[in-house]
Image (tube, rainbow, N blue to C red; front, side, top):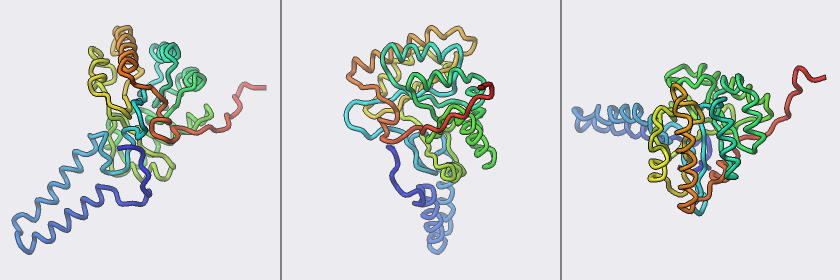
Length: 278
C-alpha cells in the first residue's frame, strides 16, 4: 500500500470487517443459529493474524511501498545506530552517492549521539523506531506504546529533527497504534521487501533474496546492527554492497524514502543549545 491519502477519521478495514461480521452473525441467528458464531470467529482470527503482516493496513493505514513512477526503490535501516556498523555503512552509502532512511531506536540514539549527527550530516533521513525496540511492544498498554514513541521523539528533537514516520518493531501493529500516532501527527511505515535476516542473525544470501523479490516502488528493509558475536560484519557489508550493485545493474534508481513515498520522513526543528556552550 502506498502513502495513504484517505481522511484519518475514515473507518479502518478492521472496523468495517468487524461491523460486517456482527451484522452477518446477527442475520444468521434468525436463519442458521448454528453458523452465527462463524463470522465472529473468522474476524477474531483475522485480528490475530493481521498485525504480523507488515504490508496489510488492517488497523490503520500503513505506508509499505512507494507509488512513484519508474524503477525506484528506497533503502531503510532499522535498529541502530551501531558504532561497529553505522559509520562504515555511511561511508559505503557515500561511496555510491546513495540516500537512506534510518529508523533508530531512541535508547541507542541517546547512547551514540555522534552517530545520529553523522547520519544527518551525510544527508540521510531519520525515523522513529521506538525507544527500547521491544519486539513485544504491541502487546503492551497504550500508555507504554505512547511513551516509547514520545521518548524517541524527545531524544531526536535534541538533534533538530522530528520524525513524521514511525516504524513499529518487527513491523507489527495493533488497534491502539492508530490513536497514538494520530495524536502525535505521525504515520506508520513498514516495508514490502526484506530478506528475513532476523536483525542480521541470518546474513548469507541476503542480497540475492532481496534482488529476487524487489519490484519498482519497494521499501527495502535492512538492519544497521552487528550480527551476534560481531564476526559477520564483513560478510554483511559484502552483502549490502552486492545488493547495491545488483539494484543498479537491474536498472533501479535508489532514492530517498521521502521521494519514493511522496511525503516527508522528518521535519527540521531548531537545535537546542548544548549544555557546554558558552
